[in-house]
Image (tube, rainbow, N blue to C red):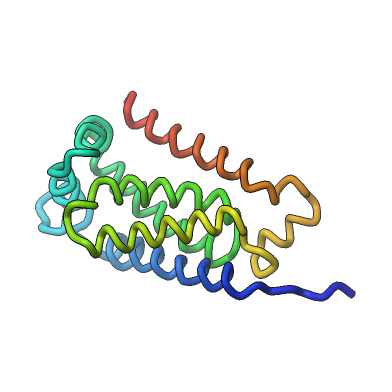
Length: 177
């Protein structure tokens, strides 16, 4: 009988990150009636306009995000909830955290100048996401059930490339529609 080995830190970080994503996606967006309402003060478009004041990401926000502000708002909400649930389950951990890393990176580069809280939490989340891309869900997650059947599933490079291609595909879709 094989003995289950559960590593504390990758699982603790994965579960902690899951709670942050679920809180952001569910409580700050899904349950916020103003998030997708242009006449609300909590409208996602107002956030985009504030973030556009920073110089680094202004062209990206103007050309890719602003023309599709409602769609991007929905994608962010769905993404955050998905990142939370998939991390909670330990399912597709490396892919999930690659896509989450890019989501945090864009926000980090857009909001770095707003305040140190935004800067700090996104930087911390990106570090944890990189750690989870490298470590994966370990044995305490659904990834462990699939690992026995597919050995290549443990290669972080494959998942990083897949997540990168997915994220770039979404950006190109937004750019050319």
